[in-house]
Length: 164
Image (cartoon, rainbow, N blue to C red; front, side, top):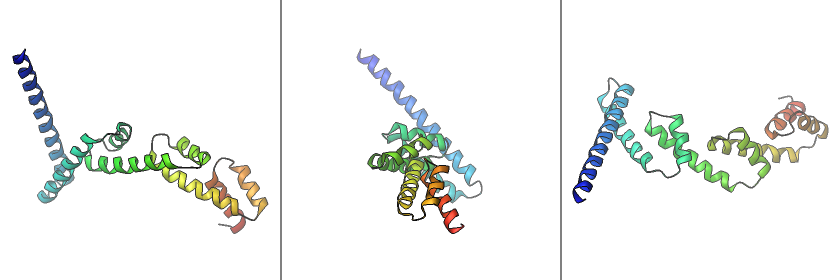
């Protein structure tokens, strides 16, 4: 039994070394592709990519990780950047208060928390703006044209009132 465990551990460690080497060579190839004539930039890119790869291996939110990997399958630095941005936006969206506006944002971008955050903020700002407008006929027309899109209501209202 002890011998079987040792053999299993040996096989697992060899497999992990092989994976590590293939990742390192993949990253090295990426750096060479990005900077074919600049050895210093290749070294810099390699270190940055390897660090980002190690970060991505350790992340805990698999849903957000899938977004980052889908957007940048071969660039670990961009995966890390996207992961952090998406994770922050996901956390932000959990704190939002206006459920109507949140529904607009999540409907428009069901798989992109950064765009949900952007849309939420833009729609909320436009909704608050539309509450303050004075020209009721222009407001009515804007609401009639875009009953579920405050940003477009604001655009139409401003176009009618200010000629923008």
